[in-house]
Amino acid sequence: MALATTADTESLCQAYGEFAQEAQELNPDYVPDTVNTDGWEATQQAWQRLFPTVTLVLCFLHTVLGIQRLCRRYSQLYETLTDNLWRLYRSVNRRQFAQRLRRLLEWAKTHVTDAPLRQKLLNLKAKAPHFMVAFDFPKAYRTSNQVDRLMDYQDRLLYDMRYFHGTSESAHQALRAMALLWNFHPYCRKIQTLPPFSASPFEDLNGFRYHDNWLHNLLIAASMNGRRSPKHEKHKMQQN
Image (cartoon, rainbow, N blue to C red; front, side, top):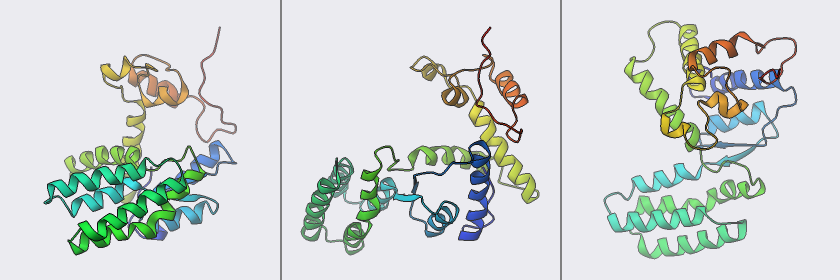
């Protein structure tokens, strides 16, 4: 978690660079195969600069939301387009994706009269290669909704505190504190009763907890095997 002063390539490269540095401190060979982005050019350029071999996958959800915003006043068209777009998303390979996209665009040319909406749909043809590249990586994320949900939560926190009132460094530390607390915060009881019965994101990642109390768990985890120790090892429980 880092603070970017602007949304241009240089600032984002510096912010994402903090992630790259910390990831490679844990694993010097760390290089992501893919990264899912919303299409912001500066974001894509930053990732490619930090990891030249990474494959960019365009977020399909952002495209769906952009199309939906242009047709909310047409209820029937909204439902039809939404169904067709997610049917396109559920294609099992490149060939099926291309076939369904071609049919969707042919349908749009005759059934969509709103010019901005029709153009938005026709733009899918140019975006198609950036969607279909995901078929080469079966484990790749095709939407960014998982990180978007975390960012929505963080955005609400920032709004409630009326954003930042100090220095860039204090803002940076506040953001990192939010991320740290999120990793150890306890899930609600309903989630904890479902497999794999984890109590927190920390337990999801490591497969165990040091203590049933979330704050004790955080303090114990933070006191052992620091990130910048000479040799890092994954958290593990000692067996007696």
